[in-house]
Image 1: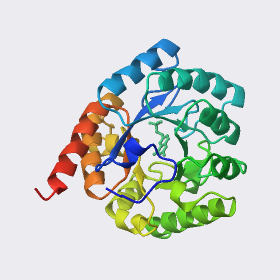
Image 2: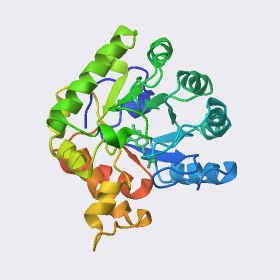
Image 3: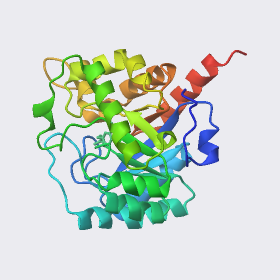
Image 4: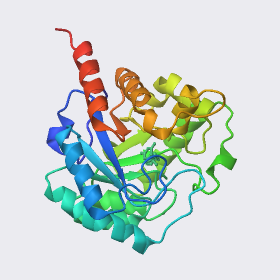
Length: 285
Ligand code: PMM
């Protein structure tokens, strides 16, 4: 586990001596793996309650799908999907992060009680994001990103993928610092599946220590993604989405062992168990 201090993180999360589990709730029609399931307010809220019961550390709420090929939704649609639900989940006593590329939504989310902003574009989609994060002094996940989902797979070309992702994340950190964000606010994420093929994802995981050279906490988002379905598939057919959670748990254990700060996952219980086991294994006595 990476114990670097994270500015603005609630104390009870900062004090955990294990990898954090971030539970995903996508209030979208078409996300990778839970698209359409949580569009209904009450269904999403029930899901949040179940995650809390299972020991989730942070609930990551997103209103805009980023699956390959996805088109953007309007700011108003994103706001309507996210903000009322956010208030309700915060009211349950949970820590909530909001997965958004829009500075305006991030600002409203923070006012409504979000403790963290998760931006898959690392500030590239909206030039005002850095200033909002700098002013709010909340933790900020800057993911490696090369472009919106409608064309991201066409820019999945690298010299050496881990070097390139590390260097592009370093440049993003510099850009955010120029906008006034403090280094201690930033958590980085290699962005598995975003402008990346399956082999790129595996290379990034294999060489994660090179991303660690940036000396910032790392979040891994691998849950149910295509590269797991492909690995486990047979006869050229991917393993279906609803049968990828065991592999996700295995990946979580490896990520925790490799020192990831957090994992972003759909199913909480198994991943929560995995990080507990790794943490206990690593303790001396
Ligand atoms: N992946 C998705 C959405 N948001 N955020 C971060 N920080 N890292 C990720 O890997 C990531 C993300 C897409 O996956 P989903 O559609 O299953 O939520």
